[in-house]
Length: 157
Image (cartoon, rainbow, N blue to C red; front, side):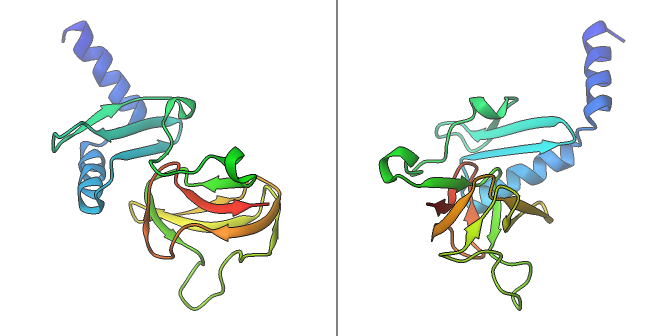
């Protein structure tokens, strides 16, 4: 086996990247009309970004700081509010089930450890923490709606 093939095999075994998972991500992007998808899984980071007018996404590996914010995200400085943004692409849920109250509501005080919502990605429910302290001024995402990486979910005073 050539050196490059051995190295690739070792990397794939290390990261346990399953092509079926990547294809599922691409299908999720196409289904929801998403331009960017970022995922972190046990230390493995991947970003999928739709290329120009092509129908298939380009795959990029990047650190979170290098990823762009979602289009339409308002700058925090302009409004004087801090934003709680989506760390991933998925579906936004304000509560753990349709029968329960939302995790947070406008006017509620939050700490950095307060769970504010759930984002479902690939049938996994991810609890999202505020990571800032303050009072919820606005819920910027719609319950049950798709969200993109970097999209504002809440604005905090």
